[in-house]
Image (cartoon, rainbow, N blue to C red; front, side, top):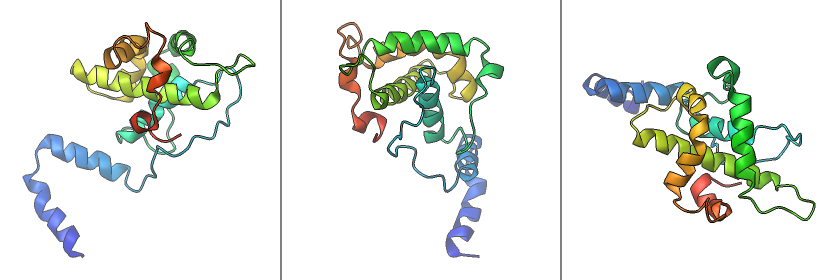
Length: 171
């Protein structure tokens, strides 16, 4: 046994239940690569759910979803597709569009990540524990969360200015 391992074993009994739960989550996902890597927009279909992908990235960043795991959105929230479509439609208005009239795919993915991170922070402010279930069940609060994190940006049509790699991870 290494010296570091022995130190960890000695420290474990002194941790609180909350700290032990955090250790368990980190060990479960040990060795996972960074989730802020550049996004390769491989999903060109118009029905691609970039908001759901943003939620998965945020949950992985927090150690609450495995690397190859996918959110079981239909089992948790049967109305997810409708909710997500409505939220994405509203959010797309905030993006600058290219001359062909389509939102740029990387900007959509970035907006999905920003929306998911904002939703997680919004739920935390309300003392709601973050989990895949709470994220999906509160998907309809994405607009409130974004307005809470970036007051006035949506009303002014400036939310696209918040798509900064420092805030949402590298694209």
